Length: 313
Image (tube, rainbow, N blue to C red; front, top):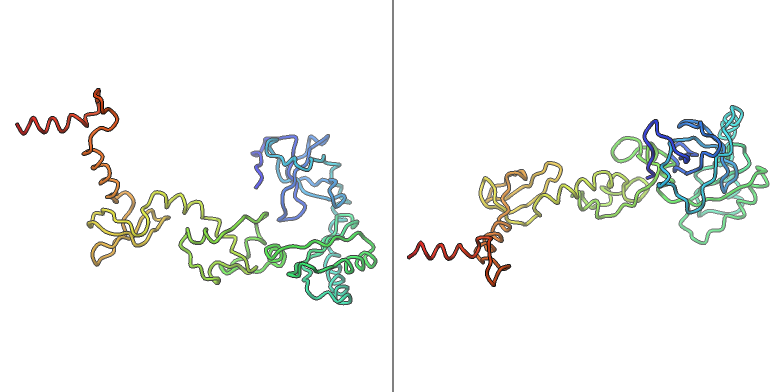
């Protein structure tokens, strides 16, 4: 996720979003030095002119310069904003037309999920998903161009993007994260579920899109950091209840469940005694100093046996 400047701070670069939950794209302020977050501007993109909203100022060292950074062309006028609403109202009809043309062309392996016009209607983007890697949708694209008299781009998207467009509720009972606040999808692995002790059954870790749930990443770092301070399952430790074996770890409670004999106790990290570490330190102390074998030892390790011998005499 891009870093943004704090409120009140400015920069020669701004982050612009073209959709409500879209990615943040970087542009130069150019001659429009009075721009502020919330303003609407018109910029030139690979899809022609687009109308977007200024979200925040971007620190110069955080700007993505790989493909060059274009400058803002102009502020959006009231007419631009009205035209955007007009073309947005036509997107559903365009999507229905797309599905009709796909049916005529015999395209059955694709699901067309979204139609999006540019603010002036000069460009139409159709988002679709398919598992057929060899599917050719150029016939549908050409037919749409003739019917709607605009430039058409066919954009293949993944299952997560489809879920974001479709909306709905997640397994937790509230609207899906991807449809409410997520602007980018983070990489998610099965290891994140393991670290948090979540059941690995597909019903528990799979979202409505058929992929690993986005929420698995939310507390992952906190679990990893918390578990570093706690003993692992199977380790023998000392507790106020006696010596026992760790059978479960509760990172967010900063405690472990320890089996002492036939009983189980929850013990906090402050109450634990690391028996293995203490035993290792004891053996090291009894072995004497290994750093000053030729004399000159001032750490006290060598003098301990001598003192003990003197006391024996």
